[in-house]
Length: 470
Image 1 (spheres, rainbow, N blue to C red):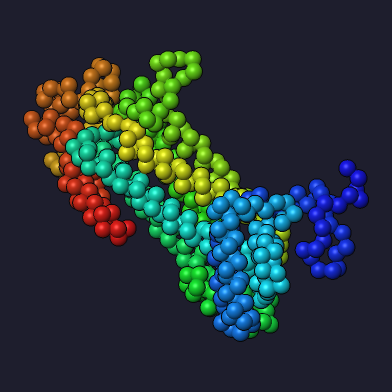
Image 2 (cartoon, rainbow, N blue to C red):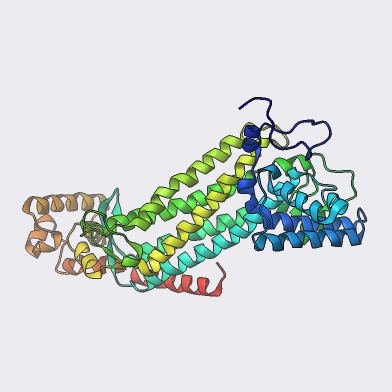
């Protein structure tokens, strides 16, 4: 392609420009293919700006009304599929303004008075993200409900607890699921905190220095539901902290989803067989007819990398930028849009998995907690209650476990006489203390897995979620 060939015209810029962009550069420069996502927010922000210009006397109230009518016309055209801007429009902001001028003539050219694309895009992005934050919170609450419903169904079900992926101590399954409800609540709290910093209006900061036009920034902020305005115009147009914060918070959501996903993958394997996957949330193999694959948790686990990558990309994009606005900021949108979409989709998929995608195998779980040495700590606690120092009890139980391993038996297989060979304080009541349900029940410290404590937490979360106070 010859270097002198130009693409779009120069009419969108000042008369300093005589030629349009080279067609390759035109494509490279344009963001319309993805920032059209912000159309509704761009229309909302423009309507608030037009009304404010009229109320402040910058333009007449009649002109403000005409601008609003034209913008609503564009909204209708978009809903009907009739507003389809192309590469020549460069971005959603120019596309709207170009169409508005076509509809209204010279009045349409007054919309951009007192603002720049720099504060405009910042406003649009915050409006868009604010709505998606609210949507994600609803999805996370649904996920908590799904986890809680499963937990309530397994108040007395036991599951092996692990540290280092080695059998540690038996747990109440409801307690295990409640741990994820706590994680998700932290995610919701973090996202609410992010929402507060998203909900600040940059509109009226103009390109970087404010404007001499007598606008009312608080007017547009209130009209758009922002809590306040940026105090510094340079900061207003160059701040993308909120995008990084959202992506960081979303990354932690994905971490928590992935941890549960990893466990479900383990649990669904034949080696564990703690859960059965329903046909609604699993796929088969194209070759092996016996397979049922845990695609949902595997995809959730895999999609973490996308969100983590976007976080790193945003941090890298921002780190070296001088004040104020730079074209680099165009790179925030695709990363943010994909993070929002990916995170919401993963939360929804995990909710469905918990609601109708798996069934816990209670009998298999019961057998699992009876076939290991996860009650060894309870022997030590038993001896402590008899006055034996803990470290001495710890060493003694280690010797008992070694003997059992050598003989291929479990602690519950030892007779009272064999136990008393290790310590005379051991009595008949030890066998009762080693029963898995008893081992779980006695964990009565606050936050523990004891059934009574778990019931307290189930009631707490049911009340909290049903009341909508979380």
